[in-house]
Image (cartoon, rainbow, N blue to C red):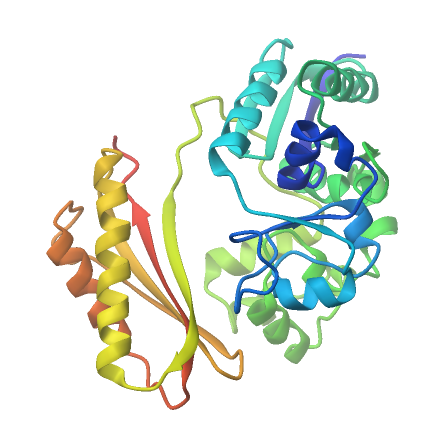
Length: 347
């Protein structure tokens, strides 16, 4: 029977897989991609690790030096974004050859959907086509909406090129006893609030009194939390070309910064360089955010909307970032700074 389904296609260890595709002799070996590819360089982190490296404890976001200690025999490679963008474009072109709607979510993931009579068969065909035409593997989650499909893809990734399905009938038996942090889009701060409310599991959140949630969260956020906990969510697959909603730039310092003037200078420089890239792409900035990570790895973020509306003025962008930085107390030495620019979608 033909029915509406949503599938989430998630490429396996994307950066590392592209590198192995370019260097077949690396197949079966632990591969770690990140920074300049030099694991001895201070304060660089892992972008992606192959399955073999992950089995030895290497994870994305881990310091490269720690990855080298956990997996000294790994092949360490620098990130090569143009190569990953080219591979992603080939994958998305492959998915577009199927009679389904496609919503690109980023370099390594996409939603497909439509009236589908056999979603498992379609998933197998998508997976085979990506492997045959591009040489990459992917996990595919199947659901009635994006939320179900996204979570199902996580289960699918437990094995190479896996396929998994979650529906309204199976959602609660599978997800009910799991921590709320396993829900798509629920971050650590929200988890803390939910635990304080006595709602640590998906089932407890799903059954929560709406008044309990609205007492702690804005109405829209409370409604959204209740909906996703019950397995609901957006089912519309949007076919417009994927456009980045934000861009960011970070720097980790070899030596911690301790003087506010130096920190201010670095933030302004990051904002100007990021702004120049945004303007070169024909985009405008509408909001600026700043991230500060201390020597103790405590990380804070602040943001502010530009009062004058969307801009391409680098002075305005840098000034906005500096104003956001003024919201930080900066009591500890700073090891990392980051600036994010939210972009105007009106191209």
